[in-house]
Image (cartoon, rainbow, N blue to C red; front, side, top):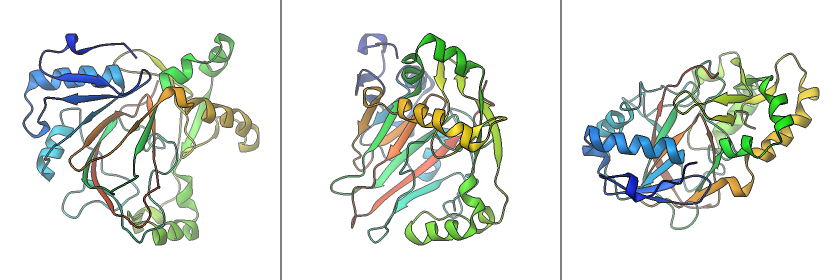
Length: 289
């Protein structure tokens, strides 16, 4: 991550959350954002990998409109969308729910042939305490490996799959304990599998990052699960070392925009008995190289 301060921006203020990843941006109304301001937001997004905003007021349409500045919007292949707005996914945990979604280190929908570019998450109702989200810089995770290990990984591909849906009983159990529901249609489909490079080159910056995650990576291409697991476990630990992370505390009206191509995230489930409700739009990406 480049160390860019406020002097590099004319229309926004940028305050890094950590030296590894993440920055909070102020002086912006995302519902009324002109092209020049968006250009600076986009620059900060590429530089810090995840950017945060406070005190926003996004309608359903302004949320989608801002998301479309990054590209076309995804309709999630697994979860039930907001009624009448298929591009908006409600991220909700009711007070009586046991589990949340996103409660594991992951990058979004990497099982697709073209995984997400990124997501824009808007907080509507937040718990009094807890419910933070962690983010981890996958470029630093790759850079922290030895040159020999980097060379080894550069030649590998890994298979990503929505494999948890292949067990109907387990999928139905998840629906019983979580407020955001898997769709009936998704649970009736066979698992999707797509191989991607273990080391991904960012299409806009040219920087390299690790591109495996515990939620969706199942094995290396042309290897068994048993053969793959030891190395994958090492990479999962490397990917989420504390020094590569930042932590964001949500408030009503907060927004996070993360780059799914070089960041993993983890939604903490530490607010039992409280409600957390958010809307997310996700931007379609390209095929990893």
